[in-house]
Length: 125
Image (cartoon, rainbow, N blue to C red; front, side, top):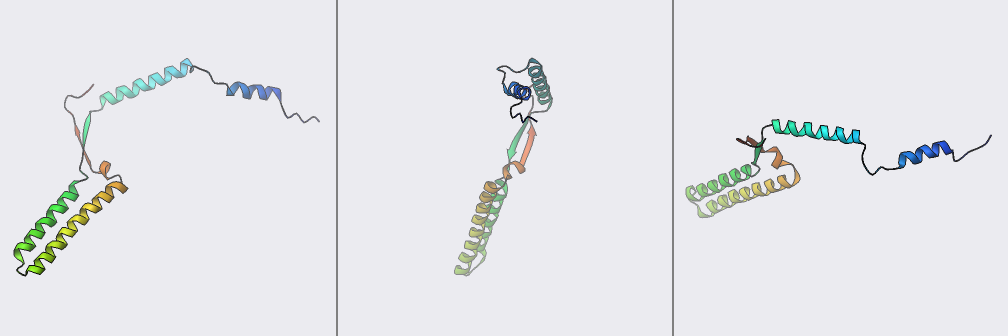
């Protein structure tokens, strides 16, 4: 029994399969073009949209709310030290909201999650 390490038929088949052609097969090229045209027509049928990201809205609302509360604390509370303390806490909570929003934007996909999509009028085709 002969142990043939190099089977010439299999070796030839492997070498032939490893050769790369400079140009793609015309049939494959036509299939890719057809697929590309189909995707292009499908995209043209879809309405064009414009996205508005609202990731900053909770941060601004939080900041405005606590700045207004700080102003109310300064006006309503008669004890000077207590009013400054309450206003400081409100200001600190407002800044903490800004910091949490910035961290949330950096760590998550918040910009994409909080987006309003609006269709464009008379766009493309």
